[in-house]
Image 1 (cartoon, rainbow, N blue to C red):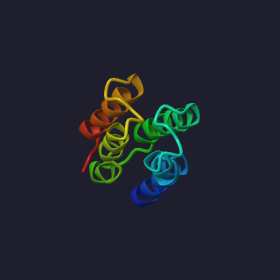
Image 2: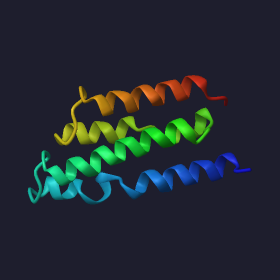
Image 3: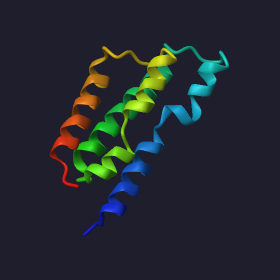
Length: 106
């Protein structure tokens, strides 16, 4: 059986694999890629889905969930114009996170 720390580390590793902030956001900031680029959109959509799946399936504690809170990363992507707060995938991720926090045990 996987420990809480192992589950958290697995979730972080999985989410990080498709994280647009680490590689692609700098390209947007440098003007080499537009926030509306189809490739960036595909990576971002995949990342949002992966993030939501990990939040819903990892069985993390409230403390662990707080460590992988998607809201700061989503806020950066919104600020840069890559995402909007009205996107269904953004709303679904935020709702999943809030449900997981509410259901998680300390």
